[in-house]
Image (cartoon, helix red, strand yellow):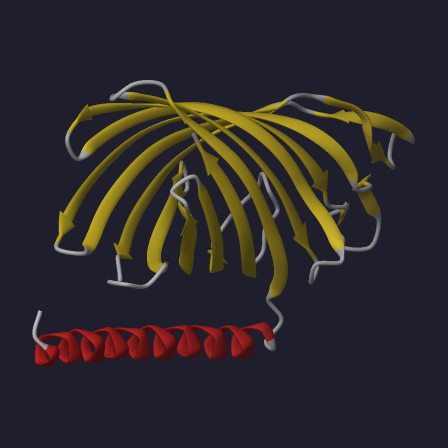
Length: 263
């Protein structure tokens, strides 16, 4: 390689990094402005492992801890397992199960007159079971990767006895069991910067339930790979919630830290 070619390559890399830094700065500044308007802030910590069983099959384990209320309150623990199958080049299918242990928020409502108390549910920890099936198509254009994932997700919350207080009957009642179907559509972009170990990614994901678009999730971050087996991640997410009668989520800014071991 001639010196002029090398110099041009480095200048292009510099321009790419400059754009990346500018984009991150805009995202963070927007996040701070929106956060000042009352949105919540939380941290998500993810730990995972992935085992390649063959050329087509792989198996994964994952664990996660989330916070809310400006990181002051533990929101959720979860652990899951998933299997992935490479159908053809650029197309993968997967299925998984996740056990969720949630810190359910307090609920209190009044009767129609707005004066008398109706029912009260103190905050409590409860279990949910989640199944998902996904199909992901991807294509590489030079160093740019584009993928589209469609995921069907079913979550079931078992009955929780003695959690809700009825003021009319002056007794504790059960929170009924409930199932929920969600279709998640995610478009993701990634870029492999030459001679640079931090690979940027960006995605937008739409959550659809029976009432329409429940929420949107926007994400930008970087991955760092060490010796091909260790993958460290840092990302920023913003969730815009339209309706969520199951998780009781609000608009949130989220910083995520992750680690995955591949073997």
